[in-house]
Amino acid sequence: MFQRSEHGFGHAGLTLTLNSAHALPVEREGWAGRFDRLAEYLSGLDWVPDLGANVGSLEWFRGLFACTLLCVLPIMLMPDMRPLPVAVPAPLGHDAWEETRAQTIAPAAWGGDTGKHMAATDAVIALANAPERPTLELTASLGQGDGFARVLERAGVGEDEAHQVANLVSSATALGDLKPGTQIKLTLGRRTNRNVARPLDFLAFRARLDLGLVLKREGAGLALQRIPISVDRTPLRIQGQVGDSLYRSARAAGVPARAVESYIRAIASKLSLGSDVNADARFDLIVEHARAATGETEVGKLLYAGLYRGSRKTQLLQWTVGGRTDWYEASGVGQARGGGFAQPVAYARISSGFGMRFHPLLGYTRLHRGVDYAAPYGAPIRAVSDGFVANAGWAGGYGNQVRIAHSNILGTSYSHMSRIVVSPGSRVFQGQVIGYVGSTGLSTGPHLHFEVYRSGQVVNPMTVSFASTSLLSGNELAQFRAKLSALLRLPVNGSAATSSPSTAWR
Image 1 (cartoon, helix red, strand yellow):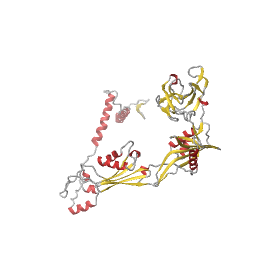
Image 2 (tube, helix red, strand yellow):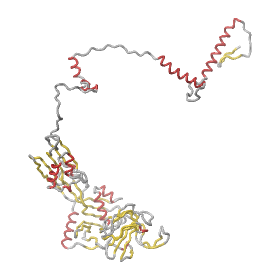
Image 3 (cartoon, rainbow, N blue to C red):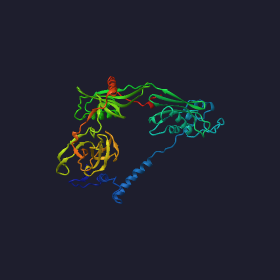
């Protein structure tokens, strides 16, 4: 006897003998069991095996059969795709077509959607040459190191006429004084044929802050017209607090970078910016300033440098004596030439002084013959006074060295340079760059080793101080004080922003 279960048919514990009347039900239960066992067997098979593995095996062929069946069945069951019959509208008549075309987008109405060119009709008359514009208006720019005539030739002016215009302009202003970036407006006229350059009919540009130039064609030639522009040249005065950084504070107040650098060099020649200047000090600068009636401004050189530290004042004014311009104190006292020295590296600290010390590389105590200034690699090194270069080159443990003779008994040397920019026998002036800070020779890091010699013997550089004396007297001193007084009466302005006259003038 078979017993039905969730797993199919099985044998029961009791066996009975059935008569022929019950044979058909028993046979049916046997077929159902076989079907269940077949379904159970087929469900246990993997019909989607990896066709890249076990190639040629029974499992692989079973997967191939299943894949083929899944591909063939959708194709066999795909519906028939036949176009649906529709009615074709009758073509429009001439009047209807013209009315429809007027209401459509022009390119589509004229066949632009086909990508084909429309053929010319008999109404079109072919031209031998396309017509030229009667005049051309353009703007040319003067580049760095560019020639005025060359700029005009690039713009289309003929070579002969370009040189003629350059000669006219040079009669009003020097061509070499024109600033790079100057904008030149041109108008080129009609030419007789395509084989010649267009004639220049009009030209205008800003030659200087106080001068504009215009050239116009009058008859067969060009006429030059000068347009003077009123300029106010009152110097500009700017004040502010030093704060954390003198340079950044001055730049934030609107002082141009070059004027700030000149100011710092002037003040550093009298004071130590590291120890003598605090955050509460106030700076006072007066620079050349020109403002045109058309609104453009130009900032020139520094005229006055002042620094106020409470009741202590440092006031310096540029003045020329004997063809040489220098900074002089308010009393008319300037730096004496020959005995006074300035710091060779700006903003540098002294890392090692003159005297006996333990050498960090040699490992024993010996005389340190100069002063070491710790400074960033590549910082400029300047001559402390006027003189002649006695030696410039490699000097053993000193590395790259420059020696300067300042007089019959005084001399200085600058060692461990990364680069030297002067040659032996050349003349140098105080403040002139002679090289750059490095770490050549016996050196543990970037710094300047500075030595001073008197009659060939080294001396402590810190004992050589400024030897100041009054170089102004009489009428010259009176003129100096009058100019200083006039500058100090100037009001304080807020900004020194500049704009180029070559681009702003119309």
